[in-house]
Image (cartoon, rainbow, N blue to C red):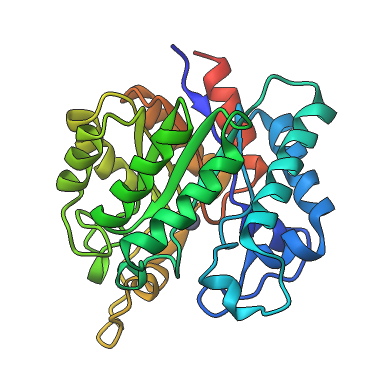
Length: 300
Ligand SMILES: [Zn+2]
């Protein structure tokens, strides 16, 4: 079976089109655009579908109850989830394609900070509210950039209650660039085993360098049935001036070299050879990356 193609990076697309994109660490990041310029997000969905995406993901990644505390006048996260779903549905209608919609289950707090995940009650309330909005309206629920086994398994367990198809995507942006571990320092292997025990439909890694995604695929392939990847458009590049960098996200950016869509396509070919069920793009990827992946998939 040919692999399914996910869409490109929302934040990067927003930035590339000249819209304001504040820092994800201190603001509501892409949710700012969802609130103030939803038409741009609609156009990004349409462009991804036309580039060849089989699946588009809702744009409410940073619209969580914890992060929206930063914007006291912002709508509720449940309202923004509904709005992001409508934008996806509209994009599918406009293009007339058979594109699937994935409802986003993001981390409740700052990405790559599993220490801020919140307690079980907070997570249950958050994911159950999103799940009820997605139920019968999305084809898949995708738990994205999960940074600890607790966060990932909690999200996926609730996703399964509301969706016929649940995907669980880990990030291996481990401390000091240790690509075999999650930001929680837990081993990727242990996370995949936990996901397999939940019988999720696909396990992935996202928001890591493309070469690190290739390493993760070896583990995903041996420990899960369906697997996939949506990496960043970059590779690891050693920076000798890293002595004072402790933050795993900073470490990622300090040891990074951008790769262009063609080079990303070369990684995509290898991932397809490994048998990915789905692939797409995370940070720094654009619809150009999706067009290249589409070309590769069509040639299979
Ligand atoms: Zn990313």
